[in-house]
Length: 347
Ligand SMILES: C[S@@+](CC[C@H](N)C(=O)[O-])C[C@H]1O[C@@H](n2cnc3c(N)ncnc32)[C@H](O)[C@@H]1O
Image (cartoon, rainbow, N blue to C red; front, side, top):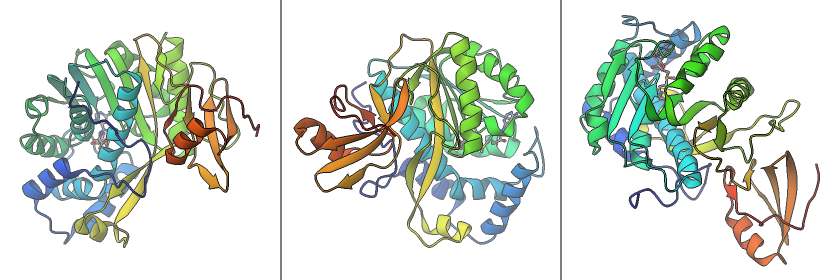
C-alpha cells in the first residue's frame, strides 16, 4: 500500500484546501464548465430530493440536474469520502480491500475517493436508482486512472435490495437519510451481511445525520461489529444532550461551483458524520479530536472523545511531545497514545 496518501485530510484546514482535481477535472472535460441554467437546475434538484428523491428510471432527473450535482455537491462529498477513507486507512494501515460495493453511488463519488485511498481495489459494484446518475457515473469513470473504477459494474436498483454481492469495503455515502426511518434497521442489516471487512456509512454533519448514525452504530455493535473510526471504543456513545459528533472537510470551489451556489468564497467547509463498522479485530484510536483545538498562550485546549467519555483536555507547553503534536492537531485527528496523559480537565 505504498501509494496510499500519507496525510489524508480528516478535517477542515485553512492551510490545506482539499483538492479534488481528478474527478472535478473529469466533470469539466465531460460536461463543460458553463454555469448558465445550472443554478436553477441545482434548486430543482434540491427540491426533488426534499420531496423524496428520484425513483428508478425517474425521467424528472435530467442531465442538467446531474450536471448541477456534479458541480455543486460532488466536490464536497468527494472530499468527505477521502477524509473518511483516510481515517479508516490510518487505523488499518495493513488493510488493502480488493472489492468495493458503493450503495447509492450517485455518479460514483465514493468509488473515486476509495480508489484513491485504497489503490488495492480491483473490483467495484455501484448501486444507484437514478438512470441519469448512472449514465454520468459511467461517463466519468472512463477518465479514471483506476481500472477498478473504469470497469465498475453499475446496477440500477434500490440500496434496500442490492445485488447479491459481498465486498471487502461497503460504503453508503449520503444515502441513508433518503431512506424511510422505518426501513433503516433492515436495510443496514442487509448492508452488514454484504460486508466482508468495513461498512462505511457517511451522513451530513447535522444532528439528524448523527442521530441516524448513532442508531446504526448501536445496531451494528449488536451484530458483533467493532467501530474502526471515528470512535475510540465500542462502548456507548458519550454524546449527550444537543451535542453531536461531526467533522468538516474543506473543499475548493471552482468558478462554476461558486456561480451555481451564488457564493463568493473560494472554499467551503462540508460538515459530515460517519462510522466505519468492521468485521476485523478492533483497531481503535486512543482518542479523537472533536472540535477545532483552541490555542492559548502556553497551552492548547482540546475537546476529545476518549473512552468511555468525551472530555476537555489541556496540553501545556511544558508537556513537550504532547504540545508539539497538539500545535498541529486538527478537528477529526486521532490523538496519539499517551499524548493526553497526566492532565485532565473535566467538562
Ligand atoms: C446525495 S446523493 C449521494 C451520491 C454519492 N454517494 C455521493 O456521496 O456523492 C444520493 C444518491 O442516492 C441515490 N438513492 C437514493 N435512494 C436510493 C435507493 N433507495 N436506492 C438506490 N439509490 C438511491 C440517489 O439517486 C442519489 O444518486
